[in-house]
Image 1: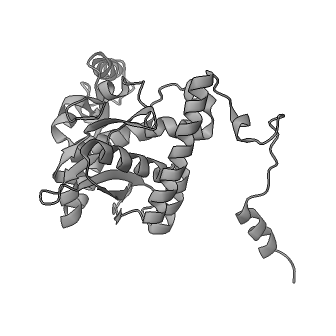
Image 2: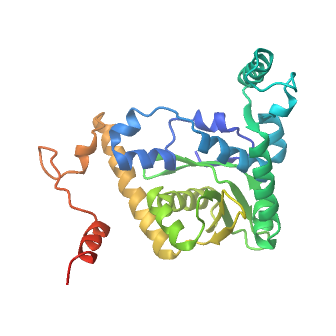
Image 3: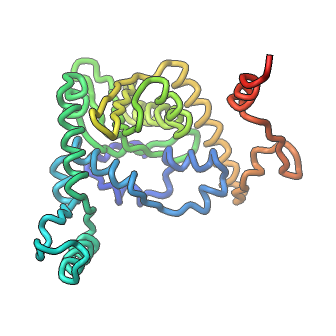
Length: 288
């Protein structure tokens, strides 16, 4: 199946568990067992990231999926939030959010996403990348006999050439080039971007560019716009192809080994070295 579903919800997209995502491949990279035994997890960082994405890219959806928690609206204004009535009000807010499957955002967080969006929109090219095209479109295809899927933050098609532009909005503590290079490795973004490029190209039949917009989570909300080099794309492609092949072997054998899959002996013993930075630090401290 090769198709684009622009209106699929996040839950509906995740329900296609017979399709491999970039997140699945990252679990395989850790070990196939981590994919086989995976559990859905949520964190405050993921919640905030989703809030920012929706506020910037899908503002109408943000209104439908979030509820504001503001302690200034507590019923007993002359008492703190720990009073009995105020605690009941707080619990009621959280229960309402749970019952209606809404995400809670507090006043400080709302101000934060508003300020971050305003800063992004002040830049002409970032504004173009984030306001044109289709946000959160779901792509489904097949690579080397494996069903695959991806869901870019935003997807723009050049009206003249038909060329795709895939945009990913990332948050970071530090959006500088040197720091983001480390994040690329830590979070395997190189794997994701190559995977996305190839899926979108397979579905559309047109070549694709990829753009990162990386914004800091603290004032003054500095941000950078990056385009991956050909080398980065090639490295990511090689890596995801190796991982897809490993997944196929595991699926066919109905075996999903742990970390031992990365060893080259029958005992699953791997020699470990000090990292290079630690050795340099030791050398730096030698008495001359």
